[in-house]
Length: 195
Image (cartoon, rainbow, N blue to C red; front, side, top):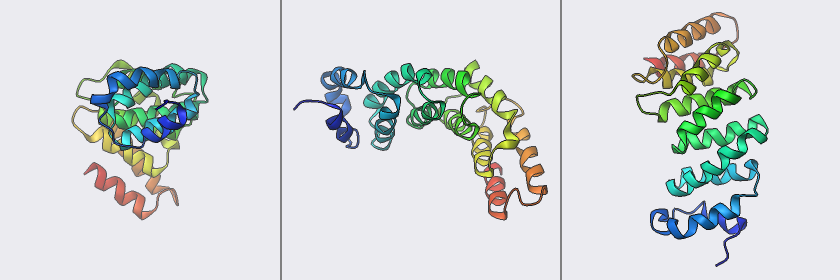
């Protein structure tokens, strides 16, 4: 079997025992993905999350991180979101988010931040805290569902900087009081999330 990008694209969607085949296959995977764009790697990262292929996901994440700064910010956020969802390269993803969140679409950056926060342990690196501060400064611009996702992440014990949940709650209440910004379903979802 020759491992090329087409074969890898299929293998990424199959729940293989990467812990067994990884040592022999992953060096070939690295060669195959080395010259591919970040946009081409995002579907593979997403597939590795769905299949819980941790070793493949970590390999893809390592390559993806090196490609984020040369990619469109929205593509970089897609890659970071997949990495965060799978728990791959979290420190590198947090660092990259801190450096790119101001150039990326705000909603995408906020979703990456929420995903990273949910999948991180109790000790948060400074990069993640800095991203929270940057996104909280613009939180009024986010849609209700995104604010609810951030609130859910920040509601977990020691998962977000002090005051994040209070800031999100204040913004949510202000948005609800302004005519037409939030519908009843959005408001209900937010309060169920934070209660």
